[in-house]
Length: 63
Image 1 (spheres, rainbow, N blue to C red):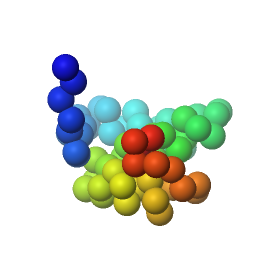
Image 2: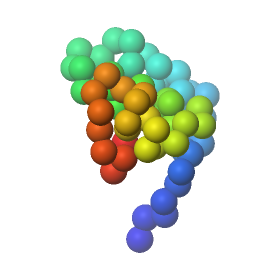
Image 3: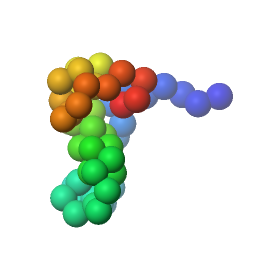
Image 4: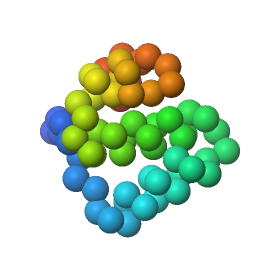
């Protein structure tokens, strides 16, 4: 069974990869997902990111 983690811990390499993906991914959904993961890793709650941290409102389960 998967363990729920509120704030994922990112290694520096993973953070750089997500930042690069957020800036250069050809598909908008990939850029948005990378941005959401970075915001959660920076301490924002998934619910807050889903409601007001992205371009479009999402459900917190989607983040």
